[in-house]
Length: 497
Image 1 (cartoon, rainbow, N blue to C red):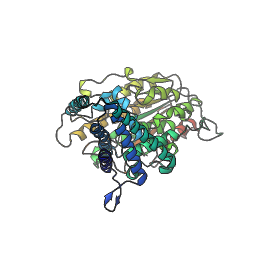
Image 2 (cartoon, rainbow, N blue to C red):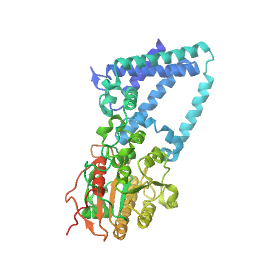
Image 3 (cartoon, helix red, strand yellow):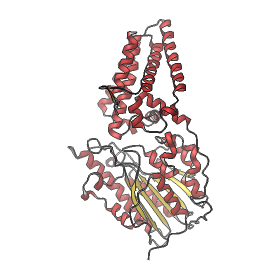
Image 4 (cartoon, rainbow, N blue to C red):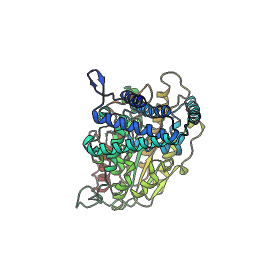
């Protein structure tokens, strides 16, 4: 009984430290009753699992609490950096850490990696030394684990996940139920979701409307720019304004704020919204990582919908296409070709870790110049992906200077694309937007303002600008999808005199 009391007390105390903190009940921070039940049963299941493996009750309690503590620390760190607690969909990325360790471990210092490795070795040694070979203890542990899981299943039949969490609100539900229960409940709600019916209007957003057939050499370029934000707004300094962004806004067919949901990460949410055009309200519990279920929604993808109007589509990304499953999702969405990292010039020694935006602009310009059919090029950049290195600068502004250097490179890419499109001598549309704001330690923090800039510039075959909205128009990524679809398939815009 003492072992169980220590386990449950420790588990609840650790969970009470998870942000957002539980509401106070008589001065005591306490989750709601269903959350306490779920937390206790999940802790017991972990304890039973470790007891079945090692046969040592004290070690099993320590291991179960270590798992709870690890998740609590990870969730609080994520909440501080990205403004969200740990989500079930984050656990789906564990495999990506092993496939692409440089993408994640670069955020962890060398001494932290060494310490973690040594800790793992010590842990395995301790487990071996304290292993108890009594088979009855191991069977008892298995019984505790199975019994706890059975009780958990029974409780969730009485208190259905759809009743406990009718709508996705991660902050509120972690505060109410606790971290482990919220992870479980959101996973179950995600599993209950189903694919939508095929798009009812695959040929456009207006049923029955005639599609505008594209010019035989027309090109549309969509650039999803990594961590691209307006530094004048981000840092509150007008002198940091980006010249090409300002110039693009001045000549844009439409521009404004893109209201993305993520901060510092979650590229796939913005990318999904622009490509598939489904708002997060439509996605429900799929919203946290819509790429996990995107294959079942392929009829909504922009390339598939443009295909019926005579467009072909290419997807460009200078990284492993298996990341986020793009190697499967993009062909299903209608992209006829994936232009991967082998097609881009690798970064030189002084250019950083990732393929540069200049190299991306080179490939886009080459493809646009040689196209023989109406083509959409959807490009995802990566140069400005954090963490940002201090480079030559030192002191508190070092990371900011690193970010500014890279975002100016993105701005130079925008300027280059505007120039090259005007010289093509064919109808052209350029859409340029940031996927999310940067999370720079000690400099930027998640808050209510998460928008990034977007611009849409359109030109006719003579390189003359087409005009649209005179005032800025704020959009969600899904609304940007529908704006682009209408621009490419609706009757031609009248050119400004």
